[in-house]
Image (tube, rainbow, N blue to C red; front, side, top):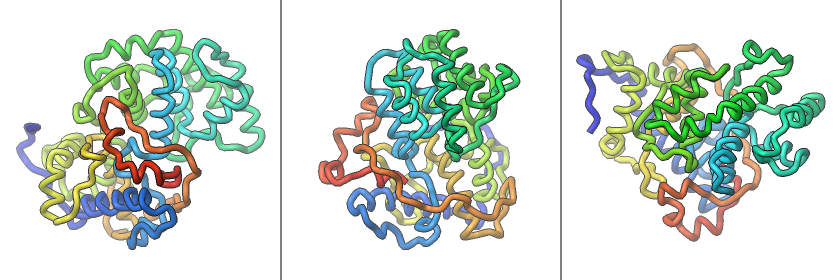
Amino acid sequence: MMHYTARNKPKKSVVYDKYWIFAAKRFDVFINRLNNSTGPWTSDKVICNHRFTNVFRASDRVSQYLIGLQYDNNDYQEIFFKTILFKIFNKIETYQCLEEKIGSIDINSFKFRDYDLVLREELQRKTAIYSAAYIMPSAGTAFGHTFKHTNHLALIQKMIDDNLFQKVMGCKSLGHVYELLLTYPSIGNFLAFQYTIDLNYSNLINFSEMDFVVAGPGAKNGIKKCFNSLGDYSYEDIIKMMAENQREEFDRLQIEHPNLWGRELQLIDCQNLFCEVDKYLRVTNPEVIGVTDRKRIKQKFSKAKPQHKLFFPPKWNINEKIDLKWRHNQTEDIFL
């Protein structure tokens, strides 16, 4: 049981219940797509027409690709290198391009200039090499290169030179990993937390996702919409409260609990859900204002490209529970 020191409790807004309703609807889409690759998967027009990430972060297409990379060998330094390289750009196509042009991606053959040349050529072709999921800040102040990607390759090189993988493995908590990543140029609160979760998918570290959370800008916006007042709670307290109370809230609304073959919503999932609910409410309840006054959802829904079967960190003990019917029927387009 989590305990809170706050004296004044948060006050729910009129759209508070939509957090749970959206979570259930969006999870239904995920499950429905496992059973039916053509659709329709929902009657909710907003979810049908716009892009929303999966309720469980680890089941999204990009996270699934990363987890696959992390478990293709047992070398800890290699796992760290591939995780950071992939997540810096956060784009499957960029990683695949590097593999195609350079050959096998591994830390022992990592040559800064070779990677830089490949990515410069992609930019000359007007190819986007970074994901549009969030803005990746440049590390130009620290490294002084002209191109953003060159500075990020320099950042990766610095992490290698610092033996950061060993320092990460020596951390005693997710919070410790987060604080360590924050010491590196261009990695702020949001990215440090995201990378912490990504590293925790691997065998480098093994902490509970219920141990630590940091509210990103989108989550803060969603929280402000779902609560008229936070009382004496922090944004992180709110996220922890939602995770702790999820069973009671789904029961209250008489809707099915989303769970990943027995794994309930973790703090990172509840944090991400606030980001997605923020977007959802821009359409369903544009009168409700958050931290910012954004009124539309930029990304429309489109089917993802074919990829692989679902695979989660083996330490979660989920893979053996996935229904064999779904396992055989699934294609990559289930990952929204």
